[in-house]
Amino acid sequence: MKGLIQRVTQAQVVVDGKLIAAIPAGLLLFLGVERTDSAGQVKELCQKILSYRVFPDDAGRMNLSLKDTSGSLLVVPQFTLAADTRSGTRPGFSLAAAPELADQLFQQFVVQAKLGLGEAQVQAGRFGADMQVALTNDGPVTFMLTTRGADIAA
Image (tube, rainbow, N blue to C red; front, side, top):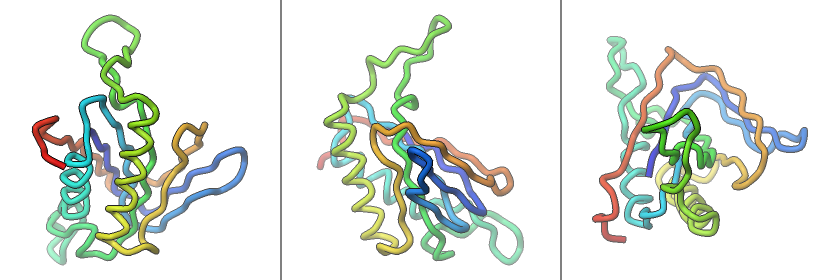
């Protein structure tokens, strides 16, 4: 499982011309699910993202997490993160999870994040939709986080 996080001052998702999710300051997460992923990776990655220290403390150092700052989280499903780009000039998607599994794990991630941050702090994009995502990257600060793989127990 892969998560691309961006520290943002604001972010939003629009589907079919309608705003479906928006957050003030916090993290925008693009979540990629691979075919070997399971509920174990959901839990591991969610805990890591909620605790990842990317916000500045009083000295300006990245020492505070989303939990520490009471920031918001916008989770956007993005299957293209599971692309195999090692060769050629066109991405391959054989590593990506089937849509049913990917949607299930995406929904589990959103539930887990709401348990960790609170219902009001978490917003989500729509799985399988053509989404327009707008954000103001703060810093810019962007990190790719991954889980260890299929060896994680659920």
